[in-house]
Image (tube, rainbow, N blue to C red):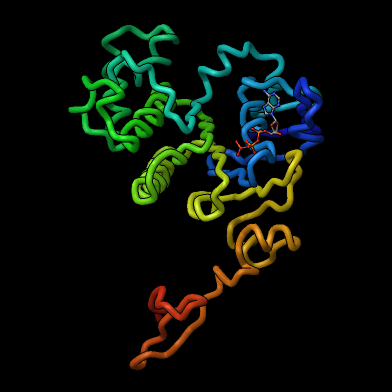
Length: 274
Ligand SMILES: Nc1ncnc2c1ncn2[C@@H]1O[C@H](COP(=O)(O)OP(=O)(O)OP(=O)(O)O)[C@@H](O)[C@H]1O
């Protein structure tokens, strides 16, 4: 479990990126931080692994204050995936994936064997191992970024707009892949996005932030959709624009679900008879 208690970050220019944030992030779930640009999402994420130091407050991981831990070792225990994949351009995919293992002192052979297994986990063909990052598609590069973050088997995975730079179809694939990996590995994942659809799709819990890292609402996607806390949240999730309104119509004896424009979205299944 990750806990932020009264956490603030004021940057040099006097910007309060995050102000007095209290947040509990449960273990083994995907928590999504979502909000518009400048709401402090990245700052919150980076205070967890001390890439950014808070100006006030405490960040705890399983009860341990991260301020008391060595930041370099802390970062090697926490996987981090960023939008641009951040791969080393002149190192092969395999060596990129093995980076943290090698930094942790694992021998070359063991690290490479483990890196290949991790490539399997994220659905990357082993044939990619000898390629260089520029020889991969954007989606493949992101998978390498996820593999690199997972290779040392961290309990926590921080993901900052991990699918922001790929086209919508690849993005959906990567979201599915993340859910599949999470089913298998049950990590504590904190994912930052500005896309509410992505938040609802991959998040067990969703935290909607407004400027200054203030929490507008948090809960499961269903809780937020059913009862937006205020007008800001209702607008942000799109319930006010009718974008999420579905209706049931009967067609040829079956109940069809249609969206706000009347386009069919699916078929309503009958309750299973036990
Ligand atoms: N290193 C920095 N120095 C000064 N101000 C910063 C720095 N990093 C972030 N900020 C400011 O802090 C605020 C929050 O930034 P942050 O990147 O955390 O927001 P975000 O919600 O992740 O935004 P985006 O979606 O655009 O990445 C912004 O006003 C930003 O300009």
